[in-house]
Image (cartoon, rainbow, N blue to C red; front, side, top):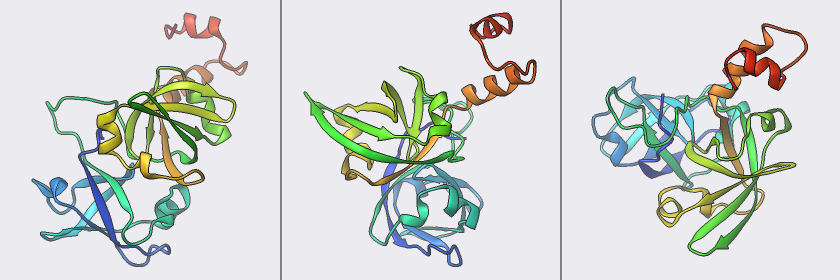
Length: 211
């Protein structure tokens, strides 16, 4: 489990889009206290540390992970968001992020708005129903607030600090991003759907205690 707060921007040292060779990441901060077998989120994907040294760590990436995420599009030298799993008693600055990517979105545009940058994202159709204004979405592992809903996705707004702390502002239109929707919405849908075959209605949510 992760908080969606990016601790460090690392760099890809080696990547094999087939998954035959380990993904190698150069970094510093996330190595502190990290041991073999620990979990580190790489652009929002939960990976297990298989080897490490003073320069970084290695992680094996399963073929299914390459298919469901944008990790296969990485190239040597690319920056990546990194975060260690949350420890008991740690502050939760973002939201609960599992590191299980739901799909791949695309950057549509980035427009300055005062000191902030508003980034428009195209989100796969099957994930849009989990987006709510002022709700959470994890983009490349970063916990962000949905500023505005769009027919094809949503907008997120980045304050100055966030612009420096994550990779999203560096990405050009068309660039792929890993998307993980808020798991709470998925659980609510599943629980409510199990009670009826009529679909989720406002009345049903109220009777189930969710509204």
